[in-house]
Image (cartoon, rainbow, N blue to C red; front, top):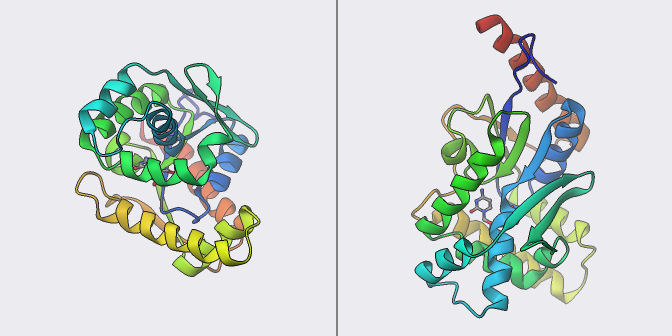
Length: 232
Ligand code: DC
């Protein structure tokens, strides 16, 4: 969907794991006819390559070198992004536990982030994208037309994650602990910590249904489309 002059929006959705970003971003993108890009999947793809090539998650220079030799592509599709690493479909593999943990570790390095941000900007050129992540509104697209910071109570986020992955029993507690640890790392890293942009709309989805969150975000996007054409 474009404004009366054919311009399409850049929409940034940031927030912690389990707040519902991916679902909202993909449903919103579908409604607007935009591309939905999961920036976290790119960190995951690099993390997977580091695992496979036995590169230390602490070695920033080696990770950047590895990234330079890699082709990481996201293909929007209905059930989320297809993730291609050197043309290999790694969409399911990058969601596994070891890669999830590794992605959080490789993403602390400033030069790894610079590499990612440059590519994410290229993908958003021209607008018509809903990009989700941790630093989209603060770093990747500080001039995004609409910035949403989607949060939720940590206990609720943990429950949603476990339900999504259908995990019960003893492994549930360790997965919840990993999520808390990852959260802490994402929020406290020195470079681009997870923080709402000053001009982000903060939405707490703890007591809101997915449909209600989507409705709110869609309304904000449609308002922006109206005001974009009115302002220019
Ligand atoms: O959104 P996700 O769970 O797929 O992200 C995986 C990791 O990547 C997450 O722990 C933090 C990092 N990440 C980031 O630092 N910046 C982003 N824009 C997206 C993800």
